[in-house]
Image (tube, rainbow, N blue to C red; front, side, top):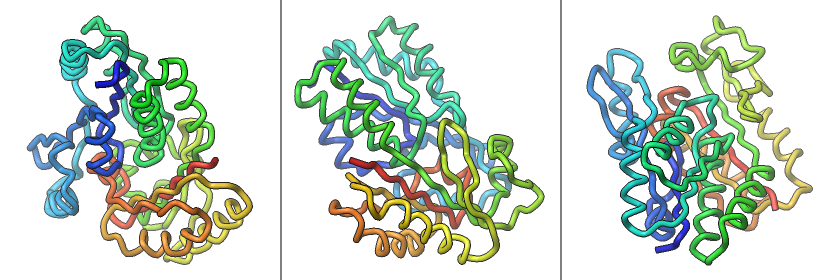
Length: 279
């Protein structure tokens, strides 16, 4: 085991094989559906949460991991021989997870560097994977942290939603500047930048997403791209069409993954995210 251990939370969207290969610890958030609390780690099977949400009487509610769970996790890693721990978490604008992690580290008395990724989903994966690879290769803590910061600065996250209803009900619309919450059934593309969701394009119908895609391609076509990740809530059809149009602009195969229950709860069905990591 690497002397530097990498931890993240389950708002990350990542291939299970990468988690295993790089020995990444994923601490789960929880989701309550009609009074029943589920660990997000138990909802990773494709389509499982979507069916739960479809049949629920009320909007599911998400919760950050308990401080005690973080403390237990850190204590366990210390017993396994971890000398240093780096925890990379969902932006504080969307969850209190990063603060719970800090409190858990204090209780455990563990040497933990807790970081706010400024992102979530595959944009957070870019940082987590880079950190885990560096740790596995024997990099120092300073080198691992420098790599994380480098990746963060070269990452962009764009999210498209087909309705604002879940964002409104979940209390996240207050963090989306410049949108009228009464216009629930409009399509909106936003950028998550500096912990704020900033609307870029809005309108009715899928032409809104197509208009954004054209502008996004113009934005990236002359830049060197290390990787692109696409996540979706609902069905993969739109995400795969985005991949087919964007693959020509990046050498590495674009990863298309279903986002987890945490993000799906707030975006609703028909949402997608395009995340790009520049060289």
